[in-house]
Image 1 (cartoon, rainbow, N blue to C red):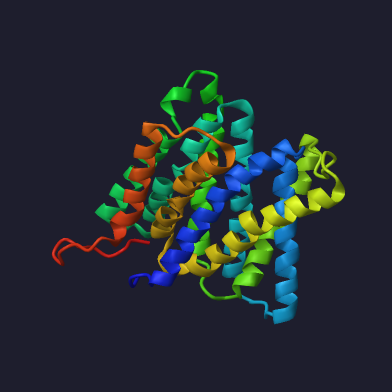
Image 2 (cartoon, rainbow, N blue to C red):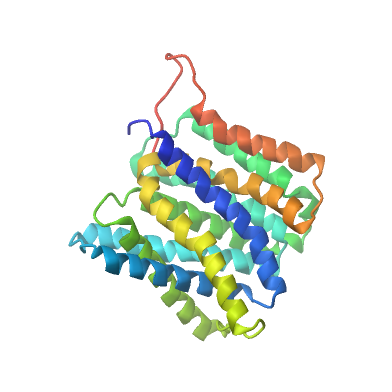
Length: 302
């Protein structure tokens, strides 16, 4: 794979930054009376509606490639597993533990790529993954919340990270068989369907009853655009250009942005450990882009 262009790298970093703002915004929405399943379903609904309009305007052609559709549908199902298992982890365990373990998606992506391509990741990518995970441990104060009760949600958080990695790997290999808007529509529509099925089984109430209808619509529209529409579009558009391994490292901007946003918007304290953790994550993001002598530089692994 040739070296990714600067625009693709920037867009993948923007995906992480948007998710970083999305986290504190979710806390505000929950305080307004939303439940987590309502927010997830509402965001996917917004995504499905927006991308439906775009596809209708574009009159995008439908691909007849069966392999493409199989990968896309699988990516949609796997991607929906991220918020579901993460919500489960937060329900039964500690939020800092779940948030930290989610960043295992970076090394998990490298492992999945190795299993598929039989090519090991470049040393700098391995080092980047180590820095990102170590930074997440410090920034989220993992060890300060690692009691027995806090760790009850650890298995679910690990599964969420594995789903996240699978989504990255699958979307990076979709190619160009359909427009980004059409691929994004399928991901959101399938996720909506899965949430409806799960709500029937588990008993989730997906229609918000806390806030006023106009307020609820405003929240869901804003969160849907911030957490689903723009990030999913950018992922399916630019992940094939960067490759999943580099893409996951670039989206780790989520953690520094989330920490800073929490301090500014929520008034959370910022400790020395968090500062060091953010620094490690930023170092991990920058490492693959540092110039090295030609004899030691290696290509970016997919």
